[in-house]
Image (cartoon, rainbow, N blue to C red; front, side, top):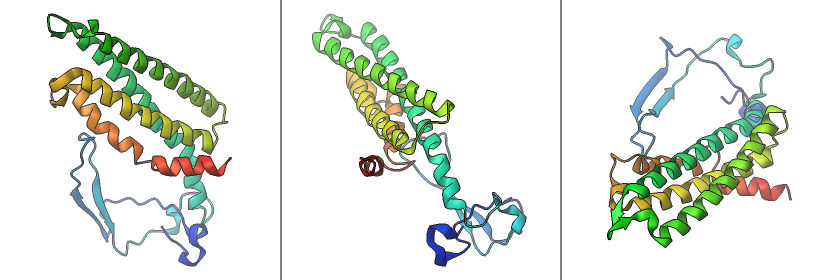
Length: 210
């Protein structure tokens, strides 16, 4: 909340609110998202809600922006975690599918185009895993800086979108059906390049460090 609007970012504070029976708090409708259907996203309204000063998160008023910034590397690494997990799952599902699916009298994996495409995707996924593991090691040791976290967030989610899209292509028309996990992955992957800071913002943060 803005506890001192005149101070800009330095006038922002984090406040904990127990929403049960709080006057002025109202939960609105659940938003109809493209993907992530299992995670509800709702409108929340705070109209003249009053809370005690003891609900301030931290020991100092006006430190909210700094508190948020301190958590951004971990948040962006978490988004990267989702990305690399989906990449590897999408590849595994696709490899299993093309081994079983027959077209023109042979398994889809026996076509050279399929082999070349999967070879490319597997290589990129392996590079992504190595980069991700390095970022995790840095974070565990307290050394994951905001710039590297931004690199991980933007690059892994871009890779996620690319690999899931190309895996879906190998499923053919079945990949467009909601009963197949690859279709749900395709929908869910899109928001990864938006939340946690858009990938365009990630590139700006990286560029400022150069």
